[in-house]
Length: 407
Image 1 (cartoon, rainbow, N blue to C red):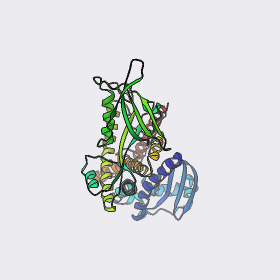
Image 2 (tube, helix red, strand yellow):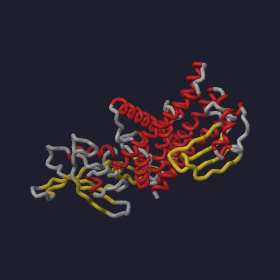
Image 3 (tube, one colour):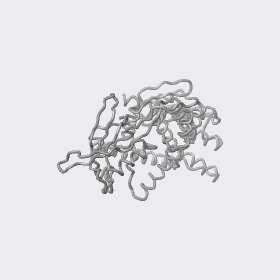
């Protein structure tokens, strides 16, 4: 089921992005020769009107082939027959419908339309999530929370397992994302390892982050009489009441300074939102997630160029697949939020001024517009080709990193 959800999310995000380019080109009078999901080899295709719709074997992206995008209208039109059946019936050169002969502002509109559509999709998904959701993360310290309390619209406050680190004590003890935490005790053990005394850790904190911090502080408090281990009492997704005892260890996620159990908690509640509130919250969350994504990309490039390394938090297809599984266990609303974050990430990534990306092509347009000189098609092709190879290599490196995390 997870693989089907993963493919469905990827399909929607890519199709929405490419649909942005497609409709922007069509509305600007530019001919679209192909609308493709995935990269070749092609599995099947169907031609309707002047556009061929293709479904390819490698589902890690997609593209829209726009007439004149490479600035070689006449040549492309005369040689298209050599590229395969997809271009056999294409019309003769029509410079009025060529991307290359449009005003720079129209070019920028077409090139940025995919990014705009991904941001719009993210806003819709987030709004739908907060409006239809039964539960979502809360912070008792926020003004928003107090408003909901005053109006009597908060029900069923719950503490959930929000994240479990690979190969951590929490994972080995059997804790899973989505388990409902009922109680946490800090244990003191006698000389033969038996639990001598228990102290209940307060899970009625304002937020999941504060609960996580309280547990971390407790197991690292060397002056306390407790702190040898903790016991988590919880209900799993099957509704079974269980408990597990685990001790904090060093070097979880590379942390050598303090003991960790490898688990994060989330404080959730059922809140009935009005549609107008969902619309506003959807916008606020979209802005918030976009800012966080921008910071994430900044940190990625800072680490890449200053340390020559890729952060462990960066995920490729394999890592994203695992995240989809975790989001699914937390419920449909979390899956919508996760899809929205992916859509924002896709938008920000594509607008980066790097060859082969939408942002790189926009940069070429701006340079030509400002300088009044056209960048040679040969050099554009070389730069875009090199950029594409670098992106593929980066994806391979991140994917290998994700696979190694599984072991």
